[in-house]
Image (cartoon, rainbow, N blue to C red; front, top):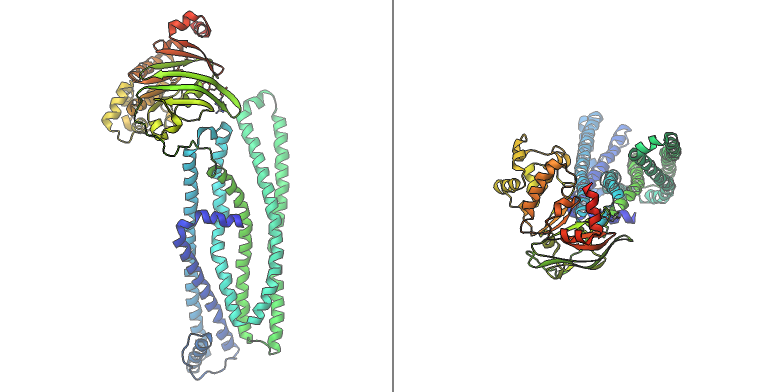
Length: 606
Ligand code: ADP
Ligand code: MG
């Protein structure tokens, strides 16, 4: 419950105004509900001919007594003139009018609640997405991506269905209950005092049932999670399952989990079904006790109430039972939602961001050199880079070669601070990059990777990604340099062609040239090429390689190459082996060394 209020505290404040309106409308709705029920009293009195004639008015005052006295006066006049039949109709009209106001205000209250509810859910989604964009890359290991998507879709929906659905109960029912209780107190303090003693006892019994539901429901959710894991593993590993004839085994595992889930859900639903008859029975018991207690008072002429008033009193009391029941239901539902909220908070409160120093320095462009100084790096505990020291003067091209897994990608990822070094420093113009403004630092760089990263958008927008001021002319010029203009013009809509999910409507070479055009347009002083041509066939490689060479001209470049033929022209080459630089030099120097580079070179010659 405390957690729930905290959740509301976090998300409700922007909607304070709407919240206030909700309370107001619900209050008015409750007042008119009491008014309509209260009119039962004159109806009963007319029917049973109990009403005493009121032939004199008292001065109007702001008190129940004076108002009801005068209303009875008018009623008496009316009845004497037109008879009891028509009087009933007139009172009935008042009842209808009161009911209209009651349901009207109830609707307005619900209207505001719906607005608050949907806005809060939108806010939660937006916050998660924003946080994802901020979080550092190490947060997103492969196994986590699915989980994150599950949280954005599943858990937010769960929060919406449980917590936000309960919002209605929370904004409405306490107001209703309060207004009804106060009306009852005014009508008969002694009887209401008695009820206030009986009611908590029933509340306690109902609450006990709710609590046991909560525990079982959590078990159910956990079990559902385990079943989902099996299904996920199965979908991913179908090939292996079939190859190893393991269908039976998997089926057995799944069936046992599904069976356990059934048992849990049986327990849950049996208990839930029990809750309804139980609360109905309890409700009836309470009414019986109240009728007995109040009736005895009336019969002994000990009560503030007349018989008709007592019946109206009971009618109001009966109206409390439903909101009270809904209220306990909401409490249970909230427990379910809080579990989902906790999972969402694992993202919202995660603290894995790359921090920018207070007073970080701006940087406009590269003027001198990039330097790695004694850099060491580890993913978790696994050491991936050791003792890396290398300096790349402005305008030079450094090539990185080495076996797959030797740490090349990791090394270049340190420069834009996708990760932070564990030991040593990376410096730009002699300044540790952790001292620089993150936005400025990344603005210095252009990336082209093995897999062109494109978005399901037009070609124009994919090239202009990250450049605010792009025009048709500049985009086209960049595309020409990247050998892309021609094939772009051949597509259906030219630059306005939407290229499909991750650019699936284009060939690999075309995708790569679009990502090169993007880098050309950004025109950064530093370039990072990570195996930009290795996924291509020889034909498109030539076009891409040509585009890359134009892109690298006059820039400082870090190039990772799979095929050594593509880096012969680099100013110097570093050979990376198991996370350390083992050889450095030009192509010819390294060949002369007859070491690891020569081995790599020979392997590729065949
Ligand atoms: P290369 O680009 O030379 O093939 P990488 O830099 O991608 O090598 O990887 C170097 C080592 O770091 C590999 O052993 C790889 O398994 C490990 N590695 C890469 N990325 C991660 C990651 N996100 N989490 C944990 N280990 C990783
Ligand atoms: Mg790599």
